[in-house]
Image 1 (cartoon, rainbow, N blue to C red):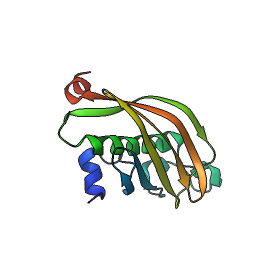
Image 2 (image 1 turned 180 degrees about the horizontal axis):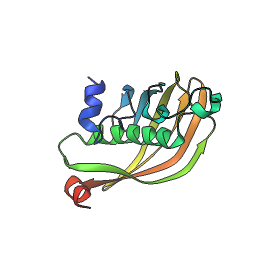
Image 3 (image 1 turned 120 degrees about the vertical axis):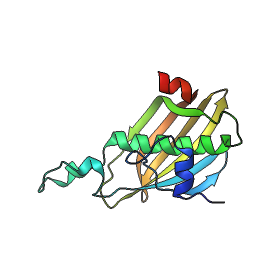
Image 4 (image 1 turned 90 degrees about the horizontal axis):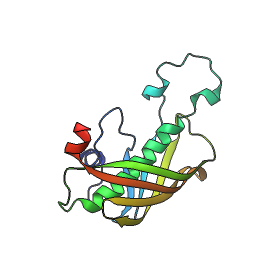
Length: 157
């Protein structure tokens, strides 16, 4: 079972610099996934920051933490759909509910996303989970509602 970086790229509809998951560390197909995202000082979001800023200015942007969690959710859902059904379907976040941040991640941290697939209804998936840095909870997601749309519709849209 190869779940390395090449597998991520085969499933995700994004490419560098927007691939925000580095590795699948655990997978229970159709049920749960654990992924890792290493935050480095070489990330594009840090490119324009001046030297000498206070440490809190180097917090990894919350929008990118949410995107990384969403990509982890997509990997879980897409890995379960890789049986040939809807091969051209593109997953998109439809809605996030009950999201709570409890801290920040900084260069040198590894964010671990723990995502559960709660249910699937037609072309919609309902997921939940949390993100951690070490033992510290960074983000809790009550519900992420994902939708799958044909690639042809997304491109023309």
